[in-house]
Amino acid sequence: NIYRINQGEDAVTVLNYYTNEEITIPLNPTKSPSVNAQYYYKQYNRMKTRERELDHQIHLTRENIDYFANIEQQLEHITVDEIDDIRDELAEQGFMKQRKNIKKKKN
Image (cartoon, rainbow, N blue to C red; front, side):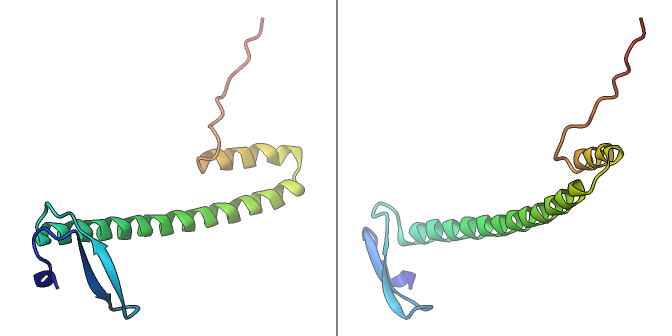
């Protein structure tokens, strides 16, 4: 449909094949039809990449929620000795800072 766009137009009306409705797309009248099309194609690809990354982040967040729910259950039935094990596990997963082994000096 790029052949239907004339240089200098500020918008073009096209058929949306998904909804079967006409939509008006704003154009930069100082750019050629090809440059305008490239702009929208790049925008589309950027949005597609962002959507993939967002889906990945949502997946990771859900995994973290499940992980913390499991930790919460463990904390309800924990002994004092097991606290260090859970703290170490959370540090290994990157949710807490690693503990420094500080030895106390005897005077």
